[in-house]
Length: 236
Ligand code: SAM
Image 1 (cartoon, rainbow, N blue to C red):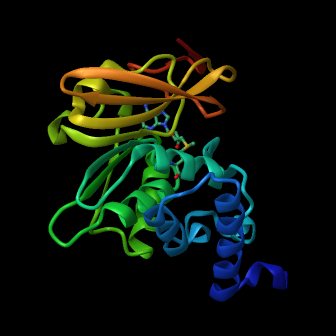
Image 2 (cartoon, rainbow, N blue to C red):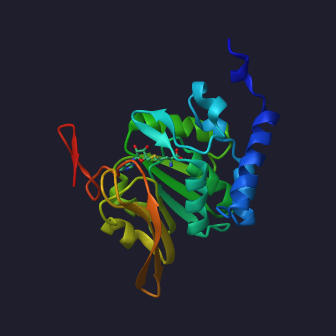
């Protein structure tokens, strides 16, 4: 067996510190609570066994079923834009590995309040994510759902924060409706593969403001209010 595959906990912790130091210096990550969360959540535990060794490469990595865990800098940029704090209720669309949901939980968790609802459309990924969330100790604050997240989760709305980790052709109406007032949503919007932009939506006193944070590349949000999936062809 390749000895490299057996990095121990301390070595992973060291790699986490190196990545955080670089992303702090280039001002990708600024907030104390986000930095602390990044150091506390082991990205290696959210990857398929063979890829654990690459956990601290700042790049998207395959997690199966054609999907990816996002690059570290992108995960942290989205967390910064969400302006998370203790006790908030978060909805994530696109659970994937469960890593982003665990980071949100690490920031919002408190004894009595704070919950992350996360939705995944691929059942086997939802199961994979739930397993990762249980083994890393975030089960108390994270609820995983298997369904079309483009419709949101009306039975648990409103949400203080909504994080969408797949790109949509436009901002799904149900998600705007389910956003609390005040509330913040972060969502990549654009084409199937090109010209996606990271949009930060703020709802305040009944008004919706949008800010464009620049170009990004995400897998598609597939569903009723995202890209449509017809006989193996994805379209909008
Ligand atoms: N946040 C994830 C993580 O931490 O690993 C990475 C998410 S990956 C970039 C995007 C995910 O969105 C994929 O797992 C994909 O299956 C999921 N997805 C796409 N359309 C969806 C939908 N309508 N509802 C729920 N999940 C969806």
